[in-house]
Image (cartoon, rainbow, N blue to C red; front, side):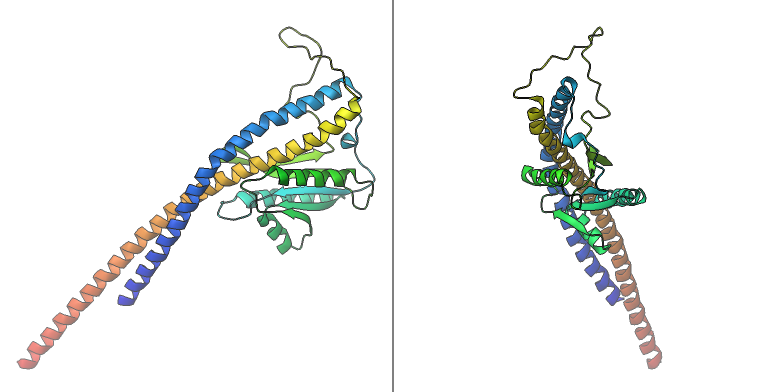
Length: 306
């Protein structure tokens, strides 16, 4: 019985240590998520403003640009998977990886050749374990992405899409990430970035007609030319899409980690309570056994004297 008591006490000590780690990770995630939500919210209006600027150019020009044309000289398709660098975030990375796997299978069924890019060590490790080649990976900033990393990803996919060499170019670019809704809900999204669609499906169509309460779109003059304006705005458009996706993913990761660590802390406390109860039961059984042995010894001595 004494051995069982020591085992339970050891489990209590180890579980208390884990509880402290879980609690610390929960507090760290809670302290960072406010800034992450602010950055994600601030990136949304800028993304919409750039979208409206591109749409305005499209409205007043023929809008013929390489980034909007479908490439038919290659069947390679780039897929950018955004996961976390570390675990302890519940099913956050698993959900993104599952959606990426479905996308890769669908592309292969369509006769296309996926070219995989990953942001976050979890995604790179996942695909490496399954012997899927990763063209390029970015890591170290999953919960606090910088504009430098967003610019590198945007430049890479732009370069691959505009590459004149069909052996290294890609005809499409898909982005798989998690969009933050609230602290308890985050949705995995699969978005085609290139060839780009200027106006999102949820955006209102642009019109110059004044039909009652709607405001007419202004007329624009482009200097030096609409093509030069597009050459400057469209890469920025791609950057804003990538940057917003990374910020949304970072906020979702922190929210998932905070929720997962809160649950882990509660589970650790429940284990400590159960182990304490079992340790007390073992201690009571040990005391009962010792008393029984003492009484049995006393009875034996009394019988020997008689």
